[in-house]
Length: 162
Image (tube, rainbow, N blue to C red; front, side, top):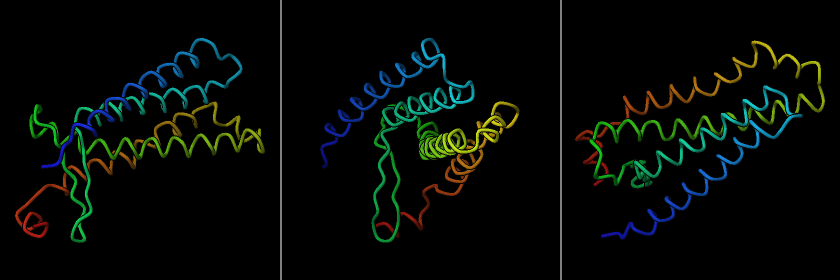
């Protein structure tokens, strides 16, 4: 039997560090930083909140992925939640990871526009900022939904993994 106490400890430490750091970033962004555009403040806050949610789900669900026999086994070692809730969190976990990556991409794109194309960056301040804020949730929501629907365990996949 694999001892899973050490990875759980690292997950909890990672959650604590992530929560404190992201909460501090949100606090500084909301109350102390004055020379940052409103759109970029929203991006930073969304990124920090998604980071907190991601590590929270990681601590609660305890997901593991293992590449074996040309397949990806994706499972949870959680024993205290219902199986349907764990399945939902397992589907949500990679979706939040995709949201975080998408938000990083949008932030770098916005920084690029601010440095080189100031007029185009001003367009982020209007309704376009709402579109750019919603954009990461569309592919990640689709990813989580498809993962929830199509990546359930069945007899064929169980026998293939043995």
